[in-house]
Length: 280
Image 1 (tube, rainbow, N blue to C red):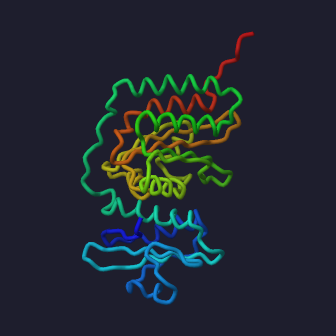
Image 2 (image 1 turned 30 degrees about the horizontal axis):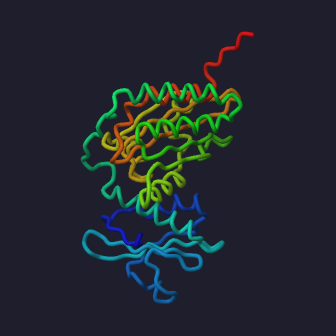
């Protein structure tokens, strides 16, 4: 990755700052109209870190250059954290024009038996995970569904006492630079617990979204890594804790909206509903 990205001029600095503040403790994000000014005093910064800042060179559609400067006062960025910053910026740039652009609906899963196969496989695996935690059981659902349907990845969250839904696990199924971008987007994604479209999901429902439908769900998909389609399900476990699993697809994934029933059913099974008493 060379740290240089092409994008349309848009107000995304606040989104980047908000996301990185939670993920890496970033202090502030600024946009320099004079690229290279900061680098002149402390060495080259084209997508690299020096001390407590990371600078990403960006090329606009009109040919002008700017430096996106990410700062953290606490301690220097590690190599892995630099990759996370660059991956997130790349993910945002890939969806350049936002969810209002005209996009074609993704194709259905190419294998007509894929949905029934993954349902049966997940239910079988869950029967073998008698002593596993709810988190591990839900992670299995995300992994199996994403693997069988060629999703970009999955995100698992748990609702806290204050109502926020925080990430407890996530995984990318892509490789190379795409893996870095998807991982960064999933690791940094925030899901507001009071998002109207998710209230019913957290109570035991399900929901699907496509970037072309113009809804708030579509905006969340685009802003969190350029994802194009998603299937979401959630609810309560036996200890009354609320969970949320989101399987996300990118431009190479089939339409994950077709997997709504499968994701919903397997999420409920993973949380233990229904679990009739065993006969002795």
